[in-house]
Image 1 (cartoon, helix red, strand yellow):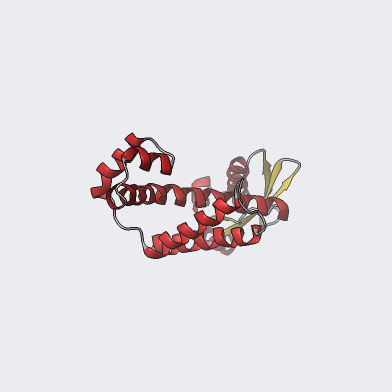
Image 2: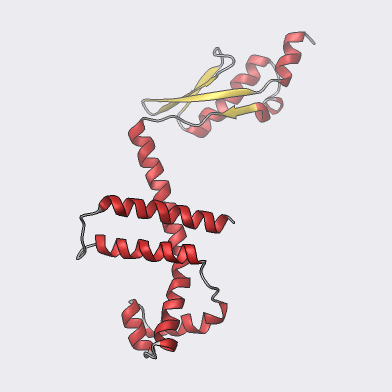
Length: 192
């Protein structure tokens, strides 16, 4: 085995991607002569590993674990849309995890502490009286929401309510800051 092929057997390779007219171009950064394309990102990844194995004259299995794919770079506007979509999804997932807990706490406070009927509690919370019964029956499973998450969620809910139809739309910037703060606080509390 030559010294060159011995060194290549130990090397790792970085792959960069470019999108051109709906086609993914892939290139090994360390060996620019090794490049290919694919109509999907997955196919471009598959093809570049095959091309590298062909270039090195080795089986594909010997190189596939040594190929590292660089993050895809897209135009700034599209990157921004992607980041916003992911942040919105994470915010929605966080809200869906905390909403049942907060609904349960509100139902408990309305029925047990304010002594309202389940029908009145349901009307105030925008759910059926049967849902209030479910929430109260499941109350033994309720665990207190962390104070930081609960306060951040309450602040966010208040600001969102003000922004939605019928509320003030003057402070969209504050709403954006609140979304970022809630996401950060929820992430920090949930990751501990």
